[in-house]
Image 1: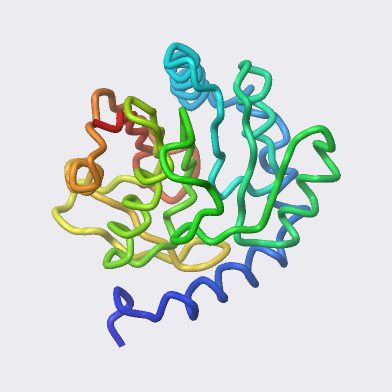
Image 2: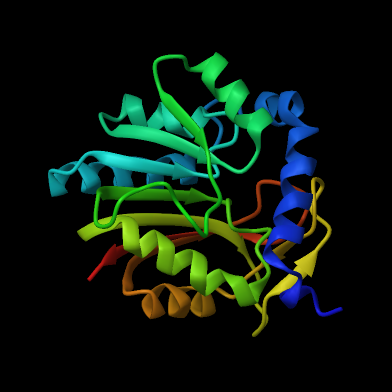
Length: 216
């Protein structure tokens, strides 16, 4: 079977089950809240500053996991809330950050009204999505952004012309050519205006990529 056409429910069920089983380990890996990740910290800080400038502080952290970045966004003066496919991750986030809102949600059907948000953070939260399904997820994120709203997408990058499937430690994932990913953002009405590529933070060998885009 072509992995690009695995039914949505099937691969999402696998992803949810996989992350439900690694909550404590995953949370411990990111407990530093970007203190050891200067490039990511710089992009998230810039994203927050630009969202604040829109006047609409409401921001969704999609695939929020244990809530560490939702808390960072809150500290950066955004009205941030987290959404995640994994109920175990959501439960952990609620315990760790009881003053913030966290809910279960699928990224193709966000529980957010149209044109409601000033910002969307998708921090490595679409890496498990088969390439054929990614445009629909980006269109859904564009739907919930107000005109001029910002999105910051982070993912693993490859130098080749096509996405590359690889064995992520939790569940299979994909790395993307940066220009191809930017084209998909443009197809959803999201214009990329800043990008950052840097050496990998892990042994996987892929570059880490961050694209900052604005809804037109």
